[in-house]
Length: 273
Image (cartoon, rainbow, N blue to C red; front, side):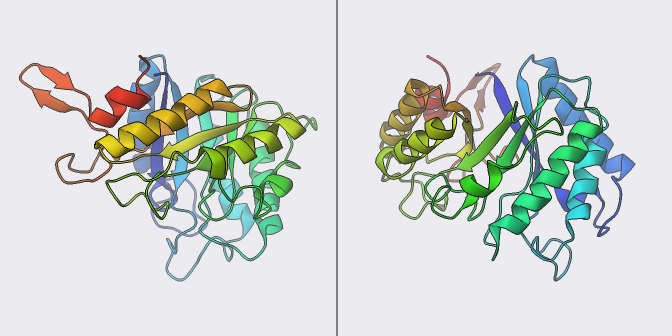
């Protein structure tokens, strides 16, 4: 286990000011989490979350000018150029009418991040429809985002960002799992990635701490590991702030005296054996 994804609301970073700059106090709070992650020696994903939701009143991502996303990305990048273990990720889109519009914004953000000094960090490129691995090709996300490049025209350290849950409707809201997603999602996507010599990361996946999820999640993770030429890795959705006794998909360990016990799913599938 060497990667942690650290979600933070875009609206939190700019203190709910549409088009505003990073709020120093809120950034400092988030930076404590980032620094704690980096201190472990792990890779740490900066996940600017919630951009697809109406986070600024009536605005949605398709209505927010791309320069606002770019401004947040650029400002964030200015504080991390000397941190090689950091990775950057943007919003996952619920549904937008034109994926090309999103790809244009992603390109502008990538350019701004690189020009701000973060030239070596991995940047994750999320797509449409909750950046679903199953739909990443069919909804046009792969075709649109594969055109995004670094300022020098290369695609080095530009990795596609996909999500996939294992419950009946891919919502991540049910404790039971019904699929390993291999035939429906990861095998077809692997073929498409190999054809263009690119990689993706499964940055959000999860299931309940029950035997059905242990079965299917372990199968899913094994497939990703067997196809590591196109799948860079994976991170499980932990929801650390949620109550592990009531949240269906919790991966938070429980304390027993002076020791901690990992959740069933994490110990069985997500934690290296």
